[in-house]
Length: 295
Image (tube, rainbow, N blue to C red):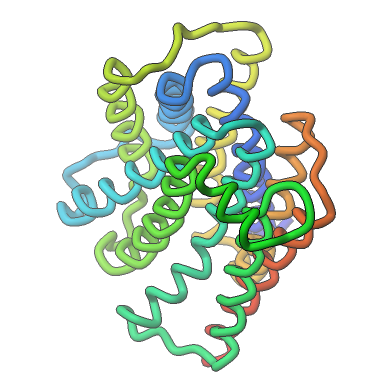
């Protein structure tokens, strides 16, 4: 098989691996706590990355990338994992995971504002469709209404706030990295930084004692490998694979993520929920296509 095709397959594998993490993070947090579970997850992911990728030489990284890029990466991962860990229930955790997928649209919006990215006019309806989709998802169960959506947010403002903040942080990271990384991949050191930050937070958390049951331990190993393996595989895909195909498929990650999470967490999702997921994916794809059309 040609090198490009192999690399593209690695990129597609990364998308599948990342699609599984929402449900697995929630499973681990139920046994190990929101902060403790996240600290264990990123420790396993960092160890896996160290095993499959070369040990990073921090001296080759631009200092601005290590400091600013690292801070954005760490804060994003903390927001994502804690928003899922602090969710009121499994269904809400899946909803919060979908809010995270606003980051592609936010990335393009920030690129338009700060990186002189050009785009066609339909980037605006694309963004609005994604936002509408998230609003639809945030309604929870039952027919959609603004009152119900607001009540759902008020039931857990911490998790919803963390999820929205995380989407913005990752969009910032994507735009900043393009400018200051100078071709370096900080996945390994940044994953280590995230684990260390969470272990520093852990003594101040209100988590109950960790319960390492067999299902929780298996979920911990699975999500650590999925997260670490996703970054390793994606790095191969974007360096040597078909980026047009990978970018197109990546915008449908919310659908895969919701499907995996529903299976892992044994949760039934409503037609309204799937409609919202479809709008998030469609809006993100429209935004991406609006930027591609200018080239």
